[in-house]
Length: 189
Image (tube, rainbow, N blue to C red; front, side, top):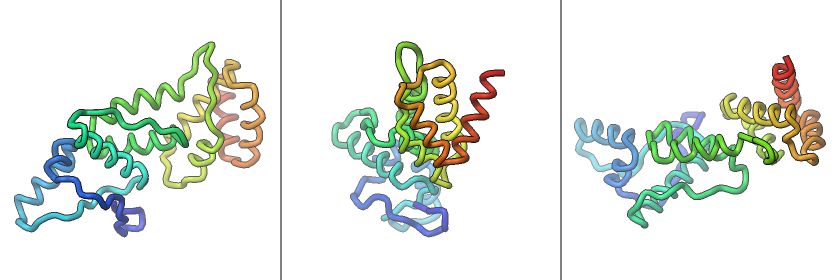
């Protein structure tokens, strides 16, 4: 993967056939087709656009599962930092035009940020910290998290114990506090 410093970072060391990659990603198929039309050298590595390395790793794990099972299978569920990781995997699947993953994860991601009675929103504070401390994270992730928390808090759909956690996070992460207060104020207007 081409990282933000312009230096390649190895994200996968196991072999996956180019034919298999091309069948799962139209972007990779077009890039290899273009490469093969101008050069006849063999390819041992692919340079992919910069993104969260762990997101690429999850996509390549999915590639392996599809190849092993010989069926389109959903991306494995994530437990820790799920919202944060799903967001970044969505970026990778969009870049590589893997509609199967993109469609599945869009639904998962939206469900995690949507709350309706009698369900309560329970976003892990570490996910919020990760989203606010990661400078490469797009503002969209932060905005989605803030929107979900502001809606839940304004409608008393935040678990009781989470109010204290949100207050503590506002002190720890001033940008989070400003964003949340502004969104709640916008909901009250």
